[in-house]
Image 1 (cartoon, protein in one colour):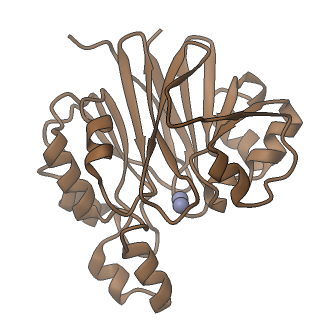
Image 2: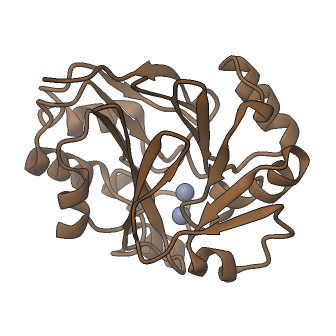
Image 3: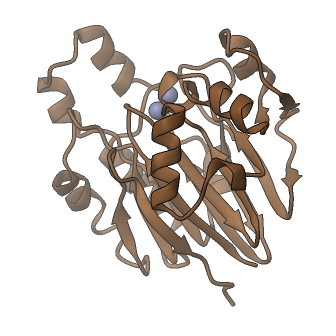
Length: 257
Ligand SMILES: [Zn+2]
Ligand SMILES: [Zn+2]
């Protein structure tokens, strides 16, 4: 089976992305309470009991806060880097799989390639998933697009891409100066323009689904993100915008070529 994916919610108040192939489903990050996760998964036709594993990108609470409680309640294995595991007291996990040396690994029939990204976390990793000739890139929470990131995320059939802020809204917005510097800095989050530049460089013609994600509710609007990305995303077959409350509904990738 080819890959399909959906989101429980996307943004600084909580993230969770489902990546599925056949009967197997992975949850990447969980920034919601158990109840909220159950409710949001039910909306997408699943229960946490259907999950094969949880993968964690990094230790910020919008990605991690719900991971240990959910893993304990449902006996789920957790995949994370040694840096993320040690970054803070996560709580007891039923089963830990360390992602070693950024080596690709497999969970069920989904192949996962971790990709190091510049972000103000101990050992952040974003992921490229492959199954049966389809590939999906998940790329949020990074301050800079490095050549390493471009190499790994070029050519994906599906892409979830951060467009966190509009630089002018961030500058004029409610955040204290230190947080503004953090968000806009090299280890913070991608602006609309950085996301557009990335798309322009790697190309969007191969994209079946482009999901613009981790959009700030305070420092961005969907309209600004849409305008900034319009030209770069022109060739993508489908372009949607993920939101904090609803995430996005299931999207299916088809084998290309
Ligand atoms: Zn985040
Ligand atoms: Zn983060």
